[in-house]
Structures are given as structure tokens and as C-alpha cells.
Length: 344
Image (cartoon, rainbow, N blue to C red; front, side, top):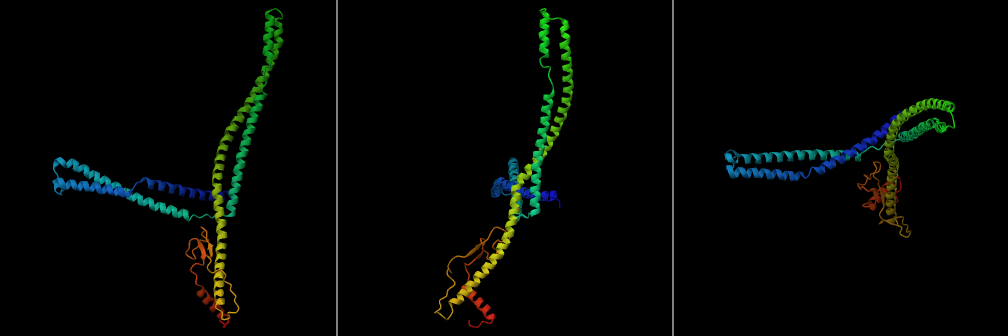
């Protein structure tokens, strides 16, 4: 499996859970909006009662005997009853469907598979790093193109003060301080400068046009890259949660195994201590059970690997509540005698 496939699979798993949570919220909201199914049933009963009372009053219990003048009112009552009955039936059916769907969604979420291996985590981190680098690289590329535009714009020369010099010369000609022949030199300079400006402007315009087009394409790519990065960033906390749950399950399995061993050793020591207390030699007062009345428990966790099913107590893998020291002593005695020790 490639990095892209592992990242996609992990992302799809997160999106599936988000979709389940969103759908459950929709179902809960619709259930709240349905109103009371019981009240609709009451409304149906009221409509039926009004119809029956009307028929009894004006038809002696028979719809066919209702006078013609009352037929319109009878029709209205019948329609009201049918509409109420239909609304109540639909509401009950929809309510039942939604409750069933809510329970199914809740069960799926409670049994959600958080499996996430090291490769998937690494693939996700690599994808996040790559997406971050891509966004940063595109922003740099856009800045570089904007710099090209600035440089090209700055490279276009201006006529400087040549137009003003020509104006001053014309003013001198007007008052007789200069002749028309003096214009040729300044006009030549202006013409040469305008040609330079024209050529440079054409080259700069080409650079600017190309850079602007590049920026437009880069910005589209940036928008896509930022969207991908935002998705990965949104998923990162859930990816970490998945990974931590997997790690916790591994530790939980080891914890449950050790808890089982600890509970076994605790009970054996209680059994041996009880046997010791019953020894005939009372002069040797050796007690190993120092606090039999103290509560001893090994807590469980909300993990599949250590839910505390052994004792039936949700919060514990083991508890000394309800243990029977004499019974434990009898088991130890049987075990010892089985090993050939008959002094007991």
C-alpha cells in the first residue's frame, strides 16, 4: 500500500465517523421536531369521538340516517378523523424508524474501530508536511512573480525633464531669446527617449503579462492546496485520537493480563494466610493478612481490552468484595496436599 493510499484510508475512516455523528445529530433533531406521538394519538381519538358522537346524535348510530342538511358537517368530521389518523400513523412509523436508526448509529459509534497503525500515522504526517510545504512553496512562487512585475514596472524609463526643457525653450523663442533652430536638438533627445520608453514598455508589458498569468494559475493551485491542508489539519486531532486509542488498547491488554495474575496471587495469599491462621501451633503467631477488611480493587478502563467483564463490575477488573477466605483456604489446602504435604 502506498503512502497516498494509507493517508486516504485513514482520512476516509475519519470522514465516515464524522458522517455517522452528523447523521445521528440529524436524527435526534428530527425526533425532537416530530412532537409527541402520544399527543397525535390523543388527537386521533378526539376526532373519532367527535365523529361518533355526531353520528349518534343525528343518525341514531347510523351514518346513513344522518339528515342531508348535516351531511356537509359529517363529511368535515370524517375528513378530520382520517387526516388525524393518517398523521398519527405516519408519525408513529417515522418515530419508530428514527429510533431504530438512532440506536444503530449509536451502536456503530460505540463499536467504532479506531485501528490505526504506525505506517498510517507516518503517512498522514508525511502528507501533512507535504501539504504545508506545498502551500508555502506556492506563496513564495507568487511573491517571486509579484517581484518580477514590480521590477518590470520600475524598469520603464520616463522622459524626465525633457518636456519641461522644451517648454522653457519655446518660452525663450516666444520672447526672442532663442530661435526655432534650437528646437531640433531637444526634439531629437525627446524622440530618442520616447523610442527607448516604447521599446522598454513593450518588453516590460510582456514580462508583466506573463507574470500576471502565472500568478492567476498559482493562486488557483494555492486555493486547492490550502483546502487540502485545511482538511488534513482538521483531521489531525482525530488521527491522533485514533492512534492513542490503539496504543491504549495494546497497553490495556497487557494491563488486563497482569491484573488477572495479580488477582490470582492476591487470592492465593488470602487462602494461604487463612490456612496459617488456623495452624495448631498458636505459640507462633505469624499473620500475613494484615488488612482483610480493606477494599482492594483493580480498576478497569473504557477499552475493549479491559472492560472489567471478569467480575461483572463495570468499574473493576477485580474486587475483593464478596471473596470467601475459607473457600480460598480450602483450594490452597487441596493444592498443597496434591503436592504431597499431608500435615494439613
